[in-house]
Length: 401
Image (spheres, helix red, strand yellow):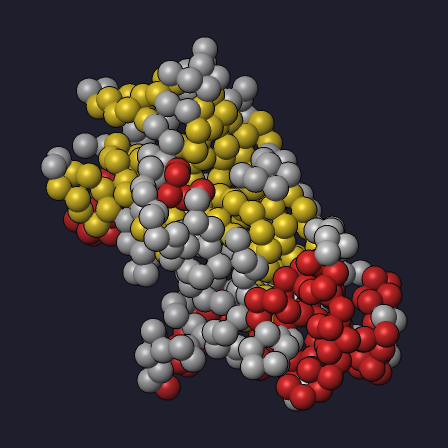
């Protein structure tokens, strides 16, 4: 075979929504369990399977059995005998942690140190769970809100002039973002509580009375007070909500998160494609391990102007969301009922997921029906076409080799 049905793995993180992913994959959710992420790839935390004949076989085992056929020489030469990316669908109902990711070199060094120290790779206090970087691109499937990079210096100055944050101005006397953020991250919890107390008393009430809108940092801070106040103590990640750019993506728009760029997903559903890694530096809005020295060592402490990706059309059906990452490339396929999708023969493997519509994927003697939630793994150099029965929306992940 050369085209396989792929079955992804659900991650039931507490911040996940309860409806979008179950409806997408046509799975009942009577207990209202959170379906946060659908993973498509070989990562050990969520390894996908392929339908080979009547059997379900791990994708990584199919790769190990015949890497040249399944991956192709160009990918093996560049990344070794492994799938270089991880493909996901995310449904964010409750904001995720403030986070950033390492460069490839930083990941290799950090991973080696933690391996040498004997920290288990699944230990809660482990920072580097593998030796890979984790650049990532996402495309919004619904209106999507996120934080992305530090604001401009003038905007940060305005934030610090707010009554609650005036005591922080002394750490920003030279417009030094690192000095300010280090002070916040090293601050005793008692001081964090004292600075955030006025907002904690005010904002949740305003949220309850519909006095706040999503284009205000106060709205998300109010949500954070409701979700992350533990035993009367406030999460220092709330400061980051005011220091980072607040970004709203419309359906079909995307954004790229490179190494060191602090970010946090706040609300919405997206398609996400990243290097195959689980390395995260956390900076708040979480109960997971926060390694402040590593976070401060690797963050980009510069103002960032968020760059919204709209995709570059390469046909009337396909547009590509270009990024500098060598590990992956993400395309959106919008196929009308009257069209046929016939891509050029590709030296890269591909994973395709259907979000809307029905049809058929055909390659030589292989004919597989497509419905929403279906995923497919396509080996390199395999000609195929997609015939829709209805208007269809699909996303394709590949390696730009």
